Image 1 (cartoon, rainbow, N blue to C red):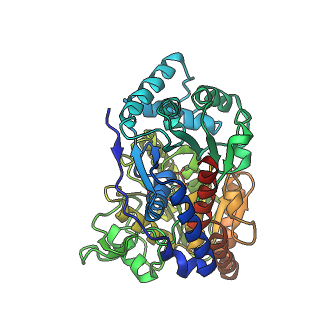
Image 2 (cartoon, rainbow, N blue to C red):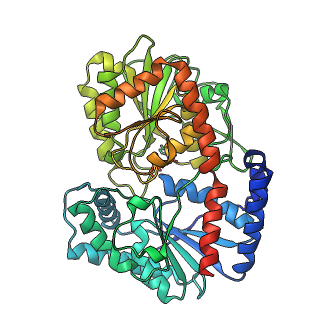
Image 3 (spheres, rainbow, N blue to C red):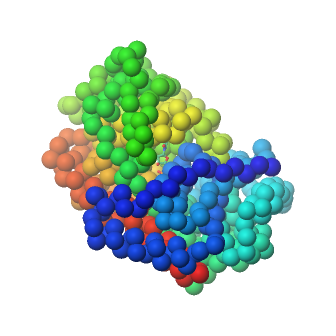
Length: 473
Ligand code: UDP
């Protein structure tokens, strides 16, 4: 069973200086140099289950590049699984969020599948893990590797990016399935305290919230004109898709082109490029509630100024560890067909190409940059990077008050929070209030950008990692 490695070009931390300022940069550089000396001769090995699609992959791409830029030998491996493995881990993921997923309970046969795939991947990893190395395992898919990595002599960190605050039988069953593999890890990392289950030893716990890179393809500044030409080319708004493919700038400063178009479900032609729109960018996952956004928008958002809704996610074959995507997209399309013609006309469902992650990121950047408002009506959310991305772009965000979204948005100051994620009316009215009031939208967006600069950029994240590694070494 092959594990694959993801190439990482080193990035120098000092590039952050123009954004985070001299003081933050010099603290970062001096801590990085201490950590790099403390780690000399040791590797830091990150393991997860996909190189593209979803927040973890999104973050590892840039975070690990900065770490490599400090001279630390950091690496990234992606596990593979048998055909039963990812449906099983998706079920565990859903259960950790209190959702029954495909509704099948976890059985001994599932334990066997999980153990077998974990052992096969661990055997491959043993070739690169040496005693004293630090292995960072991300999310439930990799939890089964922990005992093997401990046996190989590594210090093992298990980082959990998912979960819900609410206790339930499903959540307990999922933790009972996973926790035996995690008894001996050296450190747990969770995104926020309320997501930590009772069985986790608090002495071995660190809380580290995710962050974004202001220079990544997805988050670097994009002019409204550039965003518009990308949206035109991909077919999301009206334009001339036969002209030259639009360019964008990648994280490393090189120039790329958006060649591919999006797969789009809508009625009639694309909207005019000046048409205002709200967007939710998410994987096609029930917990993101794309269908709920659509139904709330159709029922509760109208107003004098025409606004459209764009629901954008990856093409459903694009995310290896997310086997439910096709099903959820189909459900959304069916629900869209049920809407009255006028409402259907205001809403488009968009699948973005995933072959080139930078091309995909450029399209997401364009969608967020030119949006009148960005929404994230998740039922559960570990953190919600799409919220961070939109806030960084100074967009007004309307989102459910769940998980880490609550740590990012201060309600009424840097966005609007909707208390009950299932309440379409409350959500629709909150969105309407932002769409109707440009001054409110502008104030929320400005504060949002400041909030992300202060708390959710890479320096804070890297310093927390540094502290953890210093404790371990
Ligand atoms: N994303 C993307 N293309 C898509 C859909 C999502 O690049 O078509 C990205 C999105 O911009 C964000 C990440 O996937 O960076 C999703 O992270 P989040 O924390 O919001 O949710 P997760 O998918 O990890 O549950």
